[in-house]
Length: 97
Image 1 (tube, one colour):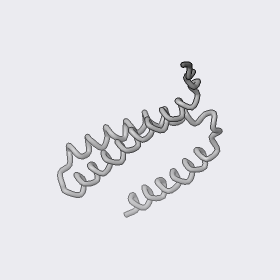
Image 2 (image 1 turned 135 degrees about the vertical axis):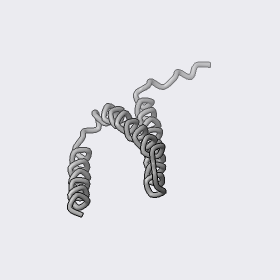
Image 3 (image 1 turned 45 degrees about the vertical axis):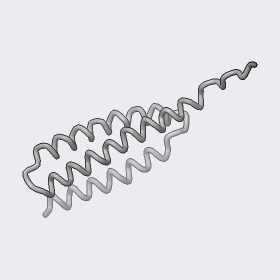
């Protein structure tokens, strides 16, 4: 029980620290930060696949599948957002007739 409580405590502290760090990032650094988090979410996705593949009971298999689903949503959503932000820096095409 103590390990679970300690794990929950560390998890909630990580949420608070992560929110504080990300909320203070200037907008100029947002695109490089998104690229870095896409790489991290790729690791989460691979880990979820490994957990789901080596699951011995139903609860672990469900958690692994949920991790794969959420990790893939983060990876693909992050690439979409990064692509949209990079398109803002491209020059508009000339409309010559």
